[in-house]
Image 1 (tube, rainbow, N blue to C red):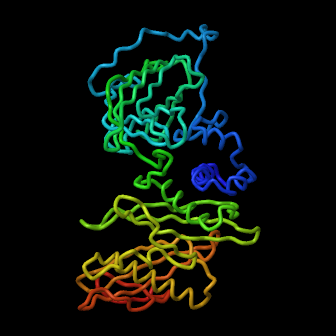
Image 2: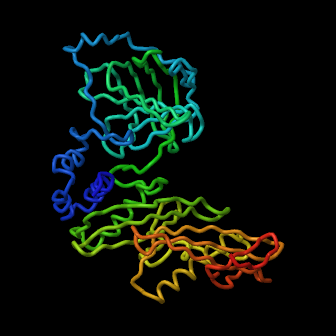
Image 3: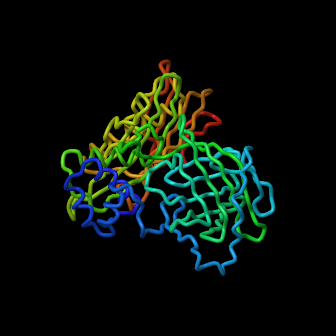
Length: 407
């Protein structure tokens, strides 16, 4: 199991408190007893130091014995009551957006995740906890200190890390409407003495626990993982889930007013050395919380089983993908009900003038196998687009004339 999946299972262990706990401790690369004990006691783990900035990390703060490091210890900095700003690498830095997710505070020069410059502050907090009302200082008496990362995305993403020799005062207020206000003073030991100071309001993102219960309103792939694991272990908390992995997690916004957000994720695991299971989970956000809507097998396509089938009022592309996926799934199941379908890709093109369209489908019948391709011909009838037939390998549509031609 990978570390990400293991951490998700710890949440489930806490909730089911059953034999799954013993099973987890026996897995290769699994979490040890001290981690689970610390988590249950609401303590932070003391050993892992992951590379990813979105995971808990342990950093030692300097003690009195390290005074020779020449860390400047100014008086308590005055944090201005104005929006946080400063300079990074000699250029102005204004905090235009900020988020707090999985213990990482991100301050961005820009209003979305594609911002050119970010300051990430990795906090040493328990997993999935929002640091409401907490204060972090560096230098300080704490044995653990945040890690600071400067992330630049101007050409290609680069990171600059600071584990010590910086000055930080970070104060969080009380959460309200999934926003966490805060104040910051940060001075870094880089060549330009990058710094930022002022106030911010961070959007709370990602999976988290509130009063010991999962927040199922969070729009996070972690939420999907939690729901999947809960479903897999609900009938047997001691069920073996060897080589557990997730892939292709994604969200779809509500298509129109009154509709719900939807989501999808695939899970693969082994219940025995020779028994590989692949399942596809579809989700819907109902009354503000994510729920499992359908569970598909590996010989079923997500695109062939939408929560709501498209109608003639939907876009031609959406209708053609739905009909092509249904046809492909049916044909493969007829030839062999045990065949599984992987990595489907759909490309559509149509002409309203000539009332003709094509949907090209690429797919695999083995995760590591070759990509197979099939093209379907569509015609626009009075009631909308209909699938006519599969094109042969020697056929193509000339969209300039609306005619079928030989390749």
